[in-house]
Length: 110
Image (cartoon, rainbow, N blue to C red; front, side, top):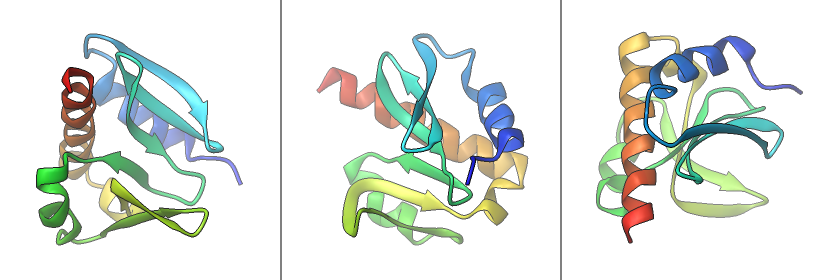
């Protein structure tokens, strides 16, 4: 299954003006990177995978349509899967992309 090209374009619109922005095919989807650090990825399973700061992870998981990301049967701490229904709303998508960008920037500084 391919990733959602329309969702990828919408993510690009919110992220491409960020300094250090780039894209890369990863995990069968399309990842948005900031200075080489993964921020968000348009998933082949629909929706997004979003990098979230550890301090915000619990709160992020309480939001509608968000769940802990699981890859290869393993929980991915610091990563949230956001349902495609949430991504349909531009304001929600922009907020999730912004979270991922902020988390990637913070990882760079660590």
